[in-house]
Length: 324
Length: 296
Image (cartoon, rainbow over the protein chains, first blue to last red):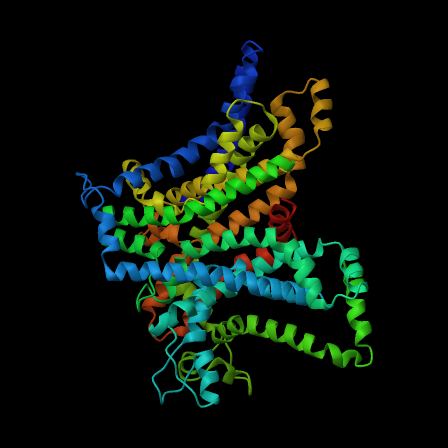
């Protein structure tokens, strides 16, 4: 048998068994302690495995990366803000920042906008669940596979040759094109094309959540408004929209993070060429150049961009706990 | 569900009763058009994955349908044999299974403590977990690679699933804690009267009652790690023996030149597992998604 398979079986059975054994052992030890001390110590033992993982894989490396961003390439001397100065003083890097900004604006707008529109409209047809499954499905596949799927959509051949990409084939039948969707960077056209692929993947996510919130709105309330003579648009604007607002705010933050972290799709579809790189991709590229100081600085810039979302989430959580 | 939809659709239908089905035609056209737009990209890939090399590189996939071309499964046979796809498929499973099982167990212990044990700093510590939810993985790569180097872990499968365990924990703890905190207090109190310890209350009560949340979480974590490219590239990189499906397929896009039909077949193989999981468990998946955001 493949030794890796043996390892995996050992891991899948052994690690959970160890964890269960750990908890049972902890409870045995606690029982031996004076009963007044037990409640104070117990939670820390139950949280220890989680805190260890969080510490090793998130807290410690984030602190290290922040420190590393102030160091030189070799990591043996502090150079102040030089890595940041390089990033903000370099036209190519500024362009990745602009691209990221475009992602952050476009992706939430497209996914939440379309998700809302579709959620409200499919609610009126009988085959709603089928329609929703179709729109939701791309979320299950990887950005890598989505990249390959849309590679065939955007495929471009020089004029005169048969167009085998779906969109250029369609343009061809109406006598337009061909158009190089991936390489045309005028007005950030190709970055917008990449965002569209991501929106194809994530609109279903927004739709499913908005749809659930929409169905939670009291039918009597909507009926009452209609009986009072409100038109469909007034009902939507006056009742549905404000009631869906909190849900849409939460999805928007999720989409902002998704946009900032976009990497896989860009890696597969353009490899960051044609001026399509974003901060999350640039961090990886600088690792490839062995520019670890610069790479760390780019990662920290990404972290700083996410901090407002983090604060929003914490505020939201505290508001929820207050009503609980 | 359909009953509520009916009652609400009524006034619109009433207003346009004279036009009947015709009045609702634009609505149906819009919804069906939307479904077609959403499906076309995937259908194109699917058709191309069954075409012969000459057909796939000389004409669009839509020409293959009318009249139907000679389709074959040769592309699938080719990629399975030639590009190490079978090995990559195994690697993907070997990464994904521990990366799903381990974080859920670890998170369940912590979530139980957060939900049912009183201790100073509980609130602040949980706020920190909420904060960690959004930390970009990019800020962790370089130090962890350095840490792994000390254990010879870079390039190993364990390097990836250990990292996924850490990265998946904040969300897992958050979801499970919120679910566990809503469990009925009386159940735990009556167990206390019976003299049950914390461990038995966890394994006999809390864990079984949390199964719906655990199911949703397992699906998320499975899809997330199966579909991940970035984390695998960083910790496995060029070690071809251990590369999962996503790396192999991503590399194919760069190296395959004109062999697009092979790329299509390979992409479909990576999609097969998540699509099956999704189609089979869609209900739990959606319930997990909406439970967190809507009830909230």
